[in-house]
Amino acid sequence: MADPEQGNQTSIMGFILLGFGNFHELQILLFPLFLVIYVVTMAGNTAIVVLVVADQHLHTPMYFFLGNLSCLEACYSSTILPRMLASLLSGDKTISFAGCLIQFYIFGSLLSTECCLLSAMSYDRYLAICKPLHYAARMNSGFSLQLAAGSWLSGFAAGTITACWLSQQIYCGPNEIDHFFCDYTPLIKLSCSDTSRMVLVVFLNCCIFILPPFLLTLTSYMCIISAILRIPSSTGRQKAFSTCSSHLIVLTVFYGTLIIVYVLPDTAVLCNLNKVFSIFYTMLTPMVNTLIYSLRNQEVKVALRKALSKTVTSMSICK
Picture 1: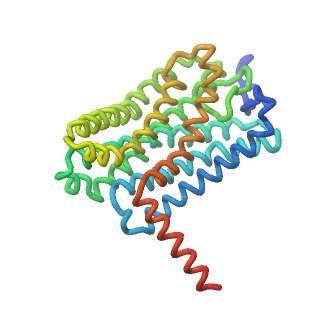
Picture 2: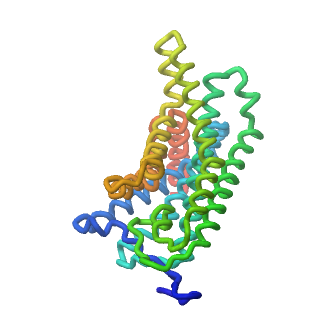
Picture 3: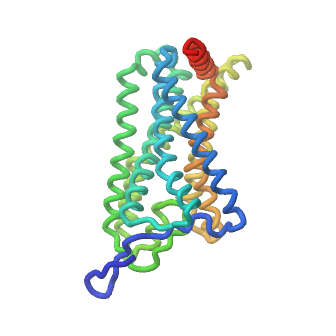
C-alpha cells in the first residue's frame, strides 16, 4: 500500500478505516442499525423534497430552504453510510487515497453548505417573526434562491480549498484511521508533512465560510427569542415559538456535536468519545431532521396526507 518517493519517504496509497473495531461485541448489531438509519434518512428526506416540489402550498421560502436541506442531507448520508455498510458486511476496511480524499471533499463541502443553509433558514425565521410586515418584500423567491445558491457555492468553495491543501500532504507512516470515515483531524494526525500551514489555511477557511453563518444564526435566534418574550399573551408566545422550535432543536444538536468534535481540546477522554459524537451529525441529525420537520409541522403533515390519499386513489383506479 506504499509507493517509493524521493529520499527515504514512502507515500501511502490507501488507508484502513478502523470504524467501530473497538466495539467487537456490537459489530453484529451495527449493520442492521445503520441500515435502518440510512433507509429512514433517504426515505424521509426524499419524501420532503418531493412534497416541497409537488405541493403548491409549500412553495414558500421556508419550505424551499427545507427542500434544499433535505436534498443536502440525503447526499450527506450517502457519502458515508453506504461505504460503511459495505465494510461492515464484507469486513474490508481499506479505502484508496483518492477515495478517502473524495469522501472528505464531499463530506466537508456538504457540512459547510449545511452551516450556510441553516443560517439562511434562521434569517428567514427572523424576518417572519421580528419583521413580519417586511417579510414578503425582503424574502421573495429571487432572494431565497440567491441565499440557497450562495450556500451551496460557499460550502463547496470551502471544501475545495481544504481538500486541495489536504491532497498536498505526504502520508508515509501508519495508514490506520481510527474513525468510520475520512475526516480532517485523523488525516492530519497521519501526515508526515509540516501541517502548520495546512492548519492555518483551515482556520482561515472556517473564519470565512463557517464562523459568519454560525454568528448570523446565533444572532437571529437571540433576536427571535427576545421578540417572542416580548409578546404579551402566552398563546401568542407559544404560537410564535412553535414556528421555529423544530429548527432550534436541529441547530442545537448539529452545532453542539460539531463544537465537541472540532472545537474543544483534543484530550484523551474526548478522543475516545469523538467517534460516538460524530454519529450525531453524520447519521442521526439527517434522520431526525426529517422526523422533526414532518411530525412537528402541520403544513407538511397535511401535504403528506394529501399525497398519500392521491397515491391510494390512483392505485385503486389502476386496479
